[in-house]
Image 1 (cartoon, rainbow, N blue to C red):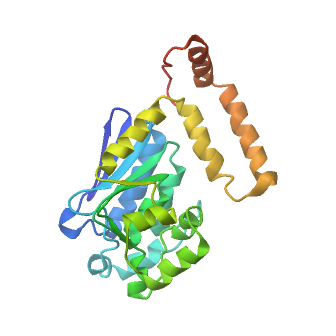
Image 2: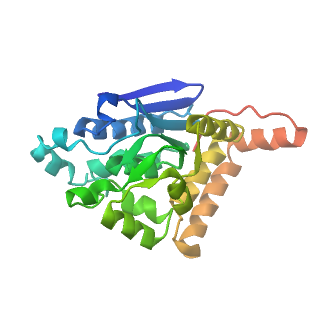
Image 3: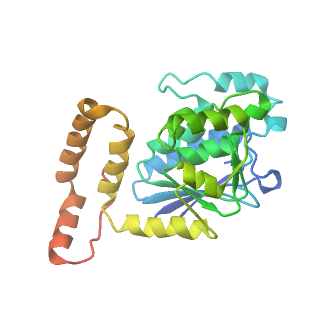
Amino acid sequence: MSDISYEVRDQVAYVSLNRPEKHNGLTLDMLDDLAAAARRASSDRSLRAVIISGEGDSFCSGLDFASAGKEQGRIMRMLVPKKSSAANNFQNAGWAWRNVPVPVIAVLHGHCYGGGLQIALAADFRFASTGTDLSILEAKWGLIPDMSLTASIAQLTTIDVAKRLTMTGEMFNAAQALDWGLVSGVSDDPLADAEALVVAIKERSPDAVAASKALFENTWYNGSRLSFPVEQALQVRLLRGRNHAIARKAGLSKEKPVFEERQI
């Protein structure tokens, strides 16, 4: 895949934006390849988590307009949603990670602007270095964010914050992002924070973790009438599964469970 690396280590897929000389500015190929990486992760039942990061000095500086601007026809085609999805190719580069059954964690440092921020917000968790600076930078170009931010940011912060950042394109630091709920944690070693979370998650049934993600992805803001049936259906699947039996047996015997591959 062009400028996107994908490596599995110890049941964790490490996905990296690999265009450091451009602060990982996004090309159109990179957008397609990010969605392809998400599909690859979704199909791998042995995975327990995905960690997305950026090589070099930044996570991602957003869309590389100098590169993408040479392909106006392709841009217009990518803006049209696929028949099988409400999302178009731009949105899938971010939102496709919400369809991956395992937790997806973004590790942020340096610049996290525009499309880069939208990819990060589409992850389940975000850990940022203390020096990270962020911006919904589309305002600089007379645009609005169009890579799934409207769905992701509504789950994380208040509408006035979302409007302000989108209207102004202002820069803000990691501490402010944490205060607004846009990142999960800030430290000098965000990768270590991400990997520590993965260790904790791997102690639990992969089916229960997948069901937990599906539970909230399918019920957030839906209210009890729509949420309760999803909750019920997922629980029935878990109760019938092998990994629940393994977890139950280990819990009763006070032993460490050894889980099978994810079934959900």
